[in-house]
Image (cartoon, rainbow, N blue to C red; front, side):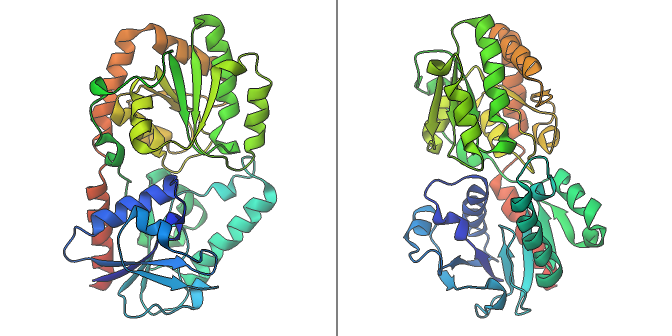
Length: 356
């Protein structure tokens, strides 16, 4: 079967969640003999395609202005892994929905949400996908609670995590910093709740003394709020903004952290949680969104709005070796369930079913 996938999200050299999904899904689909996959990219906005080629190797088709009006040629399937699909009926259409955060008005700006909802519902009701892939049952339930008419064409396919766990075991990794630290990884935006991580860190440091906070991730929506919080902290010298970090270096950082702290207000999946587990870093995460589903029983769940509770869990992990070891073992075992080969196989089965 011939598949065309929109790979525009790979135009960023430093990939975040959706870019990681596309890169690993494509590379594993390419190993399935029945799938012949090419890529499409938004050439009007991104004039050169060189960056895409640094992530994956495949034939690329440019599109301009409105993807909905474009006929790419003889393909059986068009897959939009980042919410966008054509409205034309030249081929069967698959869309991946990662979350419905635009409907959460308390988390993001109202105007931004209205624009996102408009585009999302235009995709659902004008472009009309033949199949919808959701990355978690949480996202599937959010979608169907609003649009139950799509139940028969919606399927959950989990993402993989072995893009980072393939690096050397933690015991052989170099220690990247000479001090004890906890780590936060994610785009610095409002819903990731970095402000509460900082507040919890301040309380934990008062109790523990020697502790640092490492923040990994590029700036996102409302990152200025977190920046101001750091500047105003009495422990600002112990808070380190590292920006984007490559996967191998990130694996080193995860492996020597006291804990990974991720009290996000809303996630449709949460790749960093499984990244940390797979490398051997104990996880403290939110009891909201998809976090309970994705972390299983292998993480400590907290109220993301309670800095005191989060700090208590940080102190608990830093002072309880047996608890840390147990969480690390459970996390490693749990994260092995999430494989890109499985994600690609199930995705190819969706393609095949549409053509039968």
